Length: 318
Image (cartoon, rainbow, N blue to C red; front, side):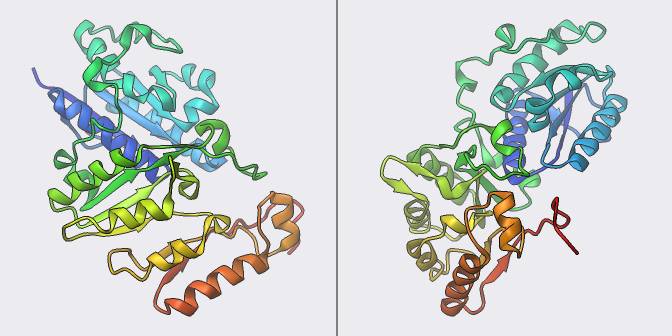
């Protein structure tokens, strides 16, 4: 009998990337993917917790997922698990929860659940999932990623996670708590991943992470990594996801002169007030931000600059 699964992903491009790996692991092990909302043997919710609204949305999708699961039980992973593990465990229909660093155990847990058909009891909850560890061929979460099976999910874009975690102290942000300290993926592994995507004709590689400006492997920083990716043979372009203003440097700006690097940069500002920025514990001033944007625009007049603004921060006036 065919084993079916579906996955609902909320939140950032890092979550999208990690969901793609989960999809690939299931696909390679004989599971048939279904769209979220169709009946499936296993339903997975990959959660986000960046705002109170995202928390509510995740819980709503968890409740929906139990209706779409043939067993009435679902698996939950992602940042909300790291933030509210016990609360999610208590939700009706949640069979097992997986923290961000446990996502590689989801397949083994699903296989065991399916084999035992232990839906009434649910999957044993454990902080380490000792009885549901993936085998040796599945331990490397990134190298197991086979993009050729994922083109419908990637919509012609290939996500490449280069980094995880953040050590920022922004007053409004939960991300360092749920994602941990900064850590970078190996330089050669990223180039190998890029090469595989290029070889199957993926036209756009998106470099993503929680704080990509903190990328560093041996003596290679983000600028060096991008420089080496855009020199690979093939027909493709590279896009970088959001980067903090204080992580921009001259070498990185120079790289936008390449046709291989998309003329787009996302620089979160968060507030146009130095007083509020200081309260937010952001490591720059409005003047610093303006200088960065003016420098970029003076060199590349057609570049698109995106940003984020938080409205209504505590003690902010009209």
